[in-house]
Image 1 (cartoon, rainbow, N blue to C red):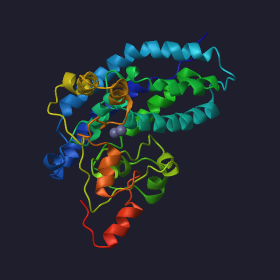
Image 2: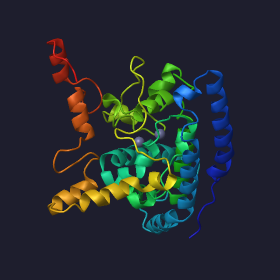
Image 3: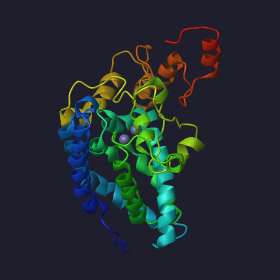
Length: 318
Ligand SMILES: [Zn+2]
Ligand SMILES: [Zn+2]
């Protein structure tokens, strides 16, 4: 079977990334905002994580690629490689990305891999390169299998994925406040993605989009940026080290430690691996749902009806 050759997005992307990261540092320095907004913070860790991610793509992901190419043998139809199958692949990839990203936030085993991207308290273009080293182990590639069976060649789907990630580089910035309203309505933008990276309770687990923000609007996870409440970037519990090896592995180590505690029931051990992050058998930690409930915001981020009525009645919110 012949594998179609498509352009290698990373060859174009790498120099673009480095030039724009330098330009962003210059812009934010000129505005006097680089120290305040942390443009340089974690820069070298972010670049190390990006480099490790490329190495991982060339090694661990080759096994996944072989599996997906094998799956192609069992396709029901073949859409070929042309402009309209490319357009379909882009939209389907973005839809699958939304769900993969949602699972990455809601299943701790997948979060152990994705947490790396969220583990900087800075938010700038270099944060986009802060990517995991072991993403092949998360298993979310299984969501690609139905797409391939339905006729999108694995190489075309991977090409669409590379463009999707290339797009997302540009939304990791505080240099752009808002884009024109029609763009903000349809596309994922710096404003929408800042919300995704924020730990304010109403922002947790929202705005999972890749390119199109419409998925969040359709599936109830969209929250707009609130200019009256600045985004607090990072994790609910920030990590103590920016050593790349620590950043890449800390949550896997934490899972192993939690799941191997003495005296747990088998189900509790499994829940430490597969429940949403923040699960604990003794209630000593909080999940996103519990943090939101205590803050009086609904899972999708808006003020809950319960809290709204309490606030009107004069109750104080936490
Ligand atoms: Zn995320
Ligand atoms: Zn991001």
